[in-house]
Length: 411
Image (cartoon, rainbow, N blue to C red; front, side, top):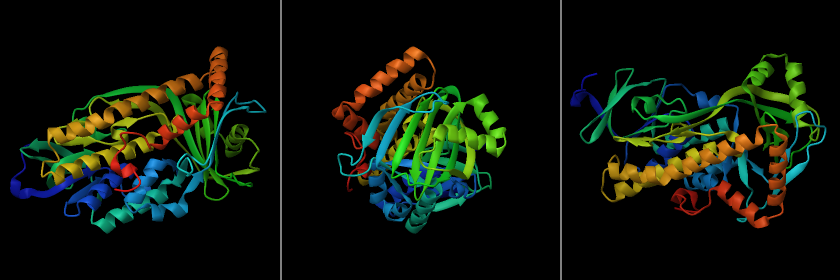
């Protein structure tokens, strides 16, 4: 399309596409630090995240971020701390699931390992905080096109309204249209696995215990929620998952109980099941001309380690820090120098987590006898090495060298 007349453009400082958790967190972090900036968040859907009945595990570093963004006080009443982690390795039909690795809280900081929060509660809090700060949220409208012009990027919405911004951020998910329009290529690997997600009620308390059963078709994770409730993330081969989702409820519940076990008493499905395909997606570049990718638009990894969303929040915290530092120096937030700093900070960790989760999935989602023996020996050895366990938990928490300021105790 042709250039838009300057008089038809509405000027903003930061334009974000995607009103999910990462996009909203980025907007809040920048607006809180630099209140005079004009920030717009646009999403093609209307309030969809507010009805999301899935749940997410928030690492301690992400909790720090939400404390710094003045969001945690509203999230905390809905958050269930993970106080213990148990890992087993067995076959689906085995009557007993031997435990090979355990982690018991408190963590070295005296806190739980992580907190489980239902997505709708998280999204509601982020939307309220964004509104309180004056972030403009526009829903039900798609970005039609964008192009660079001088010191700005010009953005056209499908409703005919046009903007010019110093920086455009794509936070629109794993199937990002913004990434595609920016011409950024991706590395993609499908696992022939589908994740089945649901929430269950149970008779007995879980006591903050998270359990991950490694089964021949993929991991089966039981994650504690508020009350006698748990969130399940159940990985299966795609054909098997399609069959499970198509059978009668009684058959599905039987298969669920077979994997879940009877340790928490009778089960009842509260929400779901939902499903989504599993794979690895890594963007070759995180930046373009006055353009940056964050969250699933930049990387999508297997949920085996529960780090996908935390990695997205790390993107948001880093990009916010880069933007704020650049503004305080009186420089251009959309400059190549600023964006290269963001990309250099994020790229290695994104690749590292993609590689780790890919290897873990390959090692633990198979039924090869020799592989099962080797991984069980490995898990058992790690369980007897407290320093290694502490290192693994600290890495998962995000409280490591090179973390953004928002991940620290205070900013």
